[in-house]
Image 1 (cartoon, rainbow, N blue to C red):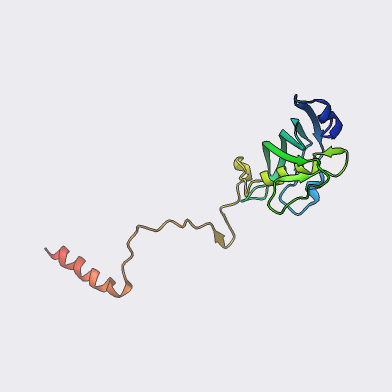
Image 2: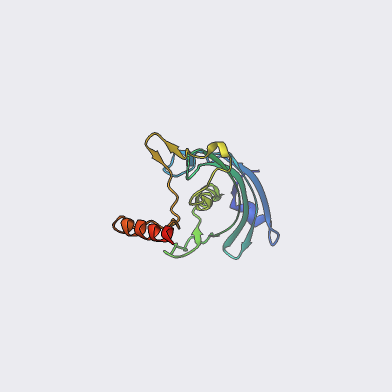
Length: 175
């Protein structure tokens, strides 16, 4: 089965849900300007139910994508599983409103691919980190080094008072 099916099949199922499953190639997401370097075909399983003139689609999207590490830019595999619900209206008089979550259907075929792409793009995390220590960035190099931002607890003596301190040390030695 595929994620593109005639609306008539959903209507024929009646009050029972129409089950579907398929594999979707989302490699076009690699070419878009986002962090996805590679994405394997995703597995989609779900069901569609007819409620009046609306079709309610509940689906699970599973897959894996390769993203850059936020520290080293090394490839990091990121597995995901998304539970998504999409709502469609089959009425020819329905027009989509700006804030509406209901999509109008124009035609006899329901193609879920654009909605799957949208849900995958929403799932991309802000940043990921590589767990492998060989992918950690160098901590120092020629003329530079990583500095820890923790405040230093070591007290430094003001150079103007250094002579006064030496006088105090001499006084203690004399006792």
